Image (cartoon, rainbow, N blue to C red; front, side, top):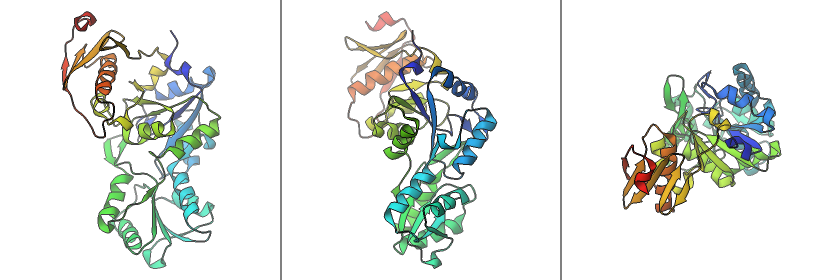
Length: 333
């Protein structure tokens, strides 16, 4: 059987929770990425982390052993600066609530970074930086409340780190939102242009978006019209994927990036029962009966297919009563 990756000509990969967690590579991820090139599959990285330049991100990836050139990385800092430049004239003053890398992107587009609301900025751009503190958020709130255009590079509520899950840019954006009652324009994931730009750079016609977050990676890839694969090495889990609202449902579920090179057991409908590999699932009203065990990823693939068929237009999360039988596939026939 063909490997999963053979259906695609490019991978658009998230970074945090997919390639690395904090400074360290996720086990097996680098080896999986290294093997794409010899199979003729292009590789691009799409990241919502605006704290580092694309050159620094690429250098970090190379240090880990992953193939990466600066042009292979598309960041929300770039998208945020592009959005900002489309909304304000050249020479406009911009309060940068974020990293020096974000400020450089602003400068590169002919805008003038400032550091205080007292500088009467025309706009505020907010991106993640681990060095942001209360005073930075306060300056952003003062400027936004005074009427400055507000752009957020992304709204990830959390970010995977080596020690666990930490607050992301969305948490910091929420603080400014709570103080001002305003809503920002959002540039990065889950908006489609970031993914479209990455695919265009690679000249890809059949890309697959790979990420660990439904609300950014998968939603954005779906909006771009690309195939999407959730990988279980970061934020989201089989349980949260099963409960996902319709717009955030991936087409594929992978345990790790090593699954690129294995056949994929795509769920198939069989007279009201969805089968994936040796597993099967069916719905009974609000119950979801799965033949198999929670340790078997094929069981989750079948479960998602059955539950999503029964709830095709879910606008919010849905949670079935989940029953695992742990018996042979013929039990559901």
